[in-house]
Image (cartoon, rainbow, N blue to C red; front, side):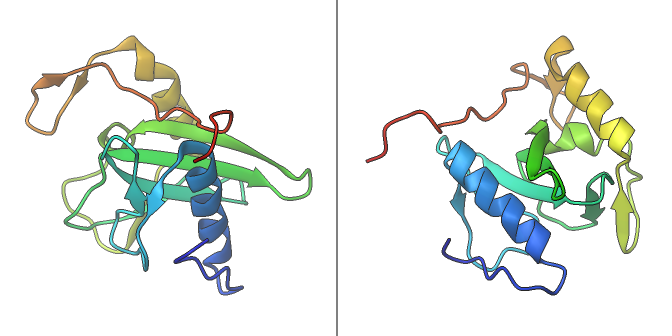
Length: 147
């Protein structure tokens, strides 16, 4: 995959998550990453991809640019399996974060699953409190013919 190095320095799981998300959802990845936006969906939405192999929730940094959408994958390397745990608006996953923080802050695995389960049950409001269309997941394009 262009832009991914698959190095064994702690970035490997994240790079695998990005590669899987790009393959499953047709994301156009941004080279370099690290800005809070890893790529874009085919409809133009910016996407942040998070992944873990430790059964922990996603970890976030306080940054200025936030993505429109978050995909969080949990890998079980012993079982050679993975699960897309969260596929929805990033601001939903971050709703309980403080306004200001330093370093990194996790969202617990339980909390991210609760937010996932509630996605289809409520209208989604943007950061200004305006109601938007109910959250949309990115759809897998795995079974679509390739160009």
